[in-house]
Every structure is written in structure tokens, then in C-alpha cells.
Image 1 (cartoon, rainbow, N blue to C red):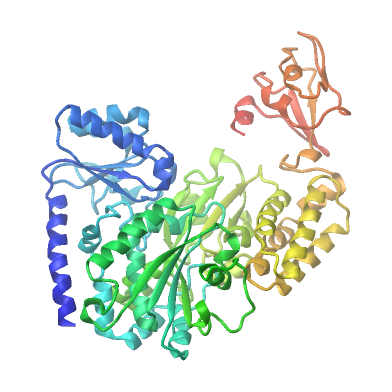
Image 2 (cartoon, one colour; image 1 turned 30 degrees about the vertical axis):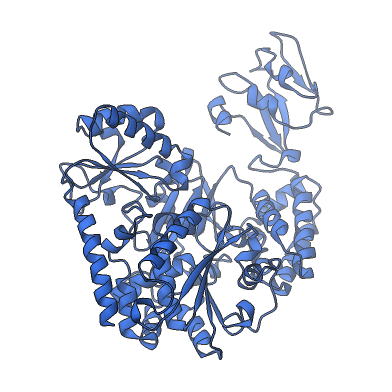
Amino acid sequence: MDIAVDTMNILYERAQEEWREIEDNRVPIVYVGSATCGRAAGALDVEKVLREVVSSEEQEVKFFQVGCMGPCVLEPIVMVQEPRGIPICYAPVKPSEAEQFAKRVLLDGDVWAEKLLGAFSAEPYKGIPPITSHPMMSKQVRNVLRNCGLIDPENFYHYLARGGYKAFLRALEMGPETVLEEVKKSGLRGRGGAGFPTWRKWLFCRQAPGDVKYLVCNADEGDPGAFMNRSVLEGDPHSVLEGMLIAGYTIGARYGYVYCRAEYPLAIQRLEKAIKQMYDHGLLGENILASGFSFDISIKKGAGAFVCGEETALIASIEGYRGMPRPRPPFPAISGLWGKPTVIQNVETLANLPLIIYNGADWYGQFGNEKSKGTKTFALAGKVKRTGLIEVPLGITLREVIYEIGGGVANDKQAKAVQTGGPSGGCIPAEMFDLPVDYESLTSAGSIMGSGGMILMDEDNCMVDIARFFLSFTQAESCGKCAPCRVGTMAMLSILEKICEGRGEKEDIDRLETLAYTVKQGSLCGLGQTAPNPVLTSLKYFREEYEEHIKNKECRAFVCGPLISYHIDPERCVGCTMCAKSCPVNAISGVRKETHKVDQEKCIRCGECWRVCPAIYSAVYRKSGSRVRYEPVKERRKK
């Protein structure tokens, strides 16, 4: 153990020297949010311009590419640390504004007040409020995301300077049994969806016979709109890899795999560099730090099959077979990868481990509630004003997340529901937004925590169409191995499409509900068992919308095309002919400066006339059953 401590102390000394150069910087330092979200918004173009401007003025400036800072809605995000100062965050800094930003902030030393997010300090800094006072950040607790946006994820010493691998050293001192007890005491539950107690899975694997055991990091994040795991891997890969060391040591594993979908090239690139750095510094391989513990990690790229997020399908994929689940028991902790005991943990679960081991279970337990301890990352998306990556204590209410952190509903529309848990989750109505976000509460509402997707829907969302959308995803991603999922999801989707097209019958609701429970109870794996959740929760909380589609042939949200007809108000039409010119089937008749008319027999309900009408208030209006909707052009064009 003394050898391990001495070896790491040498590395820590170098890391602290490098970090002191940042804290006592003599030249400005620029941190550019360069995760996938930032790059999509033009962060690399911003950095290029900033570099060119300061270079042309022969100004010395250091640049770091950092991970996702969280407020993705404000990308690109740039932080500037003046000499011997602290980082000040600006957003959004668009490529078209980069030259002006470089001159004002980097060369002239001004503060661009309109772009300020805040300073990375506990108290106001030179009159600049701390970033934690920003509405999107004030209720967050950044534990898993503690380093994201603050360190260069490709710099090994940056992670060490922030306390990296000290938890692993402590785990070596504690021994496997004590580590297991500490994880048990912490109450950590799997962050991949089901919330199974982490310590119990480890215990099963430890007690399973056999000399060879495996650890797998499940980074196959497949939920539409979810990007929590990707952001952690892109912004702080070593936190996950240190968690793998701790878990591997505790369960007695010799080999570890990171199963990451190939659609995450930046995450894979940074993982590959981080793993190489670990080998170079003796943190992977034979007899790590002379501790007697040997462990190797390799990356397996997934092909993007949603079903491979299920443990046994993931195992089949690593083994080189088609990703299809198998019956359980035996569970992977007893017989998993190549028939050996295997523990599979989600990215976020592993990233929590260094925090628990270094700070202690009691520290970890101060966040969350009795049964759901700690924090949880969420990808906040949909019709919310402030989209992005957030981390909050479990037990916080949906209302706090949506209205205080997310800023409420975009365009000040009326909230209708929030979908948690991705396509396998459920739709929770706005009346239940005071529900705590924890495992038991979400399950009681018919939804799940999932890996952390949270999608807000407003009055313009049709809940029948939402159920159809999510079920179409899970049906397409079904591996087809078991009949309840293969046949049942197809039958359910067929009924939903029939209802959305106005061909629904009264009996369809009962058929849909019966099928949903059959699929849920009879499917082999978690995909089929949870696929009906969006249907069942929308039936439970929004049954009247199904009935309106069937009885009245109307869609209150004006989403289901076959239930919408287009008409021209003679009092508003000025005869500009725009609608007639745009109609692909010549269903609109009329001459210039005279009222036009839509031939309902010819109309294919494409809505092009509604989109192009240039009147201040639309002359083209929509009908669905007895409902009529006029909308101003500015509202229409946003859609």
C-alpha cells in the first residue's frame, strides 16, 4: 500500500503544479464548452475565431476544450479567467459574435454584461453574481457533474488535481468487504432505470463461484432526447473509469468493458485517451500500484440497438452475437459474459462511486430522501424554456424541475404532461407535477426513472399521438425474440394508428388496454415489459383524448392530420393566391383579390395553405370535429 501511495503522490505533485498554473495564471485562460452539444452550436468555430484574433494581436491566451456545462439551450458557452482571477461564464457566444467577444473581453478586458451567466465563485466576484444564482443552476447539486465544464477531459492531471483516484486509493486501504458495506450504507441504486440496489448486485457476484469475473459499464444510452451518460463521458471520463476500478476491485473482477454506442464518437475518443493514460501511469494492467489487484478495461462499440441497453442483450453483443435478451435466471451476476459472473452498471452509477468512497456514505446520504439517496442527472428537453443537462437531489418535485430550473413552458403555453424514463417511461399529467422525483413515486404514477430523460409536453401535444410515437420507437427496436413483444407491440401500434387516422372504434380502447397488459406481463425483457407504459399512462390520465378521437373524430391539439380539415374565412381572405399556388393538388379555387375556397374532396390535408397564408391573422383556419383554431402567423411559423 505504501508503494501505491508514494507512486500516486508523485503524480499528485505534478498535477498540483499544473493546476496552480491555472489558478495563478499570468495570462487569460479561455474554456470553450466543446461537448457534442457545444460543437453542434458552433463552439469549435467560436474557438477558431478567438484564437485567430488573439494571435493577430500577439496576445498570449491559453485555451481549454471542456465538457458540457449544462445549459445546452445557451450554447456555445465560453468561460474566461482573467490573470489571477476566477472563471467568468458567458453565453451564448455565437460564431458571428466571436470576433467582437475576443476584442471586448480578451483584448480590452471588458465584461460583456448582456452575455453574462455568472462567475464560478461562492460569492459575487467584482460585482458579477455567482453562477449558482442563475435560475437554471440555483437548485442543482453538481456531484456527478462536478468536473464537467471545469477541466480538460483529455488532461489526466486536471482530474488528479480535482482529487481524482484518491477514492480508489482509499478503497485499496479499506478492502473489498468494507467498500461493499460503505456502498450498501450509501443506499446507491442503479441509475440505469430499475433502481436495483448496487451493493446487492455486487454481493451476488462476489459470492458466485469462479476465478474469472467481469465488470461492464453500460454506456448504451438509447432513449430519444437523453444525453446524460454521453455528457459525463465527454466531460469527465476518468470519474467513470475510477468508478470501474472501485467496482472491479470490490467484486473481484479481472476484466472490464465499456459498452458505448458508436454514435458517441467524441465520448469514445475521450475514453480511449483516458484508458491509455491509466495504463501509462500504472492504474490499469497487472498488479496495479503493487496492490495485487489486476484489472484491464477495453471498449466495445455498440451498433445502436436500443434493446442492447438490456443486460443480457448487451452481453450477447459483447460476445459477438446479435443483441437479443435471454431468460433470467440465471442473472448476469451469477452467469453473464461468457458464462462468468458479471456486474453491469450504468455510467452514472459508476461515476457516483468515487464520491461515496472518498466522502463517505453519510455525506452521500445527505442528498435525496430515505429510499432514493443521492442526486440524479436528467436531460431536460421538449417544450421547456431552458433545455439542458441538470443534476438535482432525488426527491425534488417535477414542478421545481420544470418551472424553477427549466423556466416553465416555452412560448408560455399550458403544460400538459411530462414524460420520464424515455420511450419505456410514462406520461405524468400537469396536475401531478408536485410528485417527488424518486424511484417509488414515479413507479406509483405508472412511469419509471429510466436513465434520466425528461420531456415536457404542452397543449399542442396530442397524447394519443405521443403514445403512438413512443410505441413506434420501441416496436421498431424490438428484437423480435418473444411473441408478446414482437406481435403485441405491432398490434398496439396498429390500433393507435387507426385511432389517429380517425378510423377508431369504441372497442379499440379496451383492446389496447388488454394488449398493453399482456405485453407488459408476457415479454421476456425490460424493453417489452415497459414498452406499454406510455400507452397505459396516457389512457389513465388522458382517456378523454382517446374518446374524442374515436367518438368525435377530433384532435384537440390539432396534431393528427386525418382529423384536421382546412378552410378559408371569407371575412379574412384578401385573394392573394398564395394558398392556391402552394396547394400540391389544386384543391383551392379563386381568382386574385377575391375570396378563395378549399375543395374538401380534393384536399389531402397537408396544411401547406395554412403555413403560407400571409395575412396578419390567418385567413386559413383549421377544424377538427367541432373545434376551430385560428392562429396568428407568428405562432404558425414557429411550427
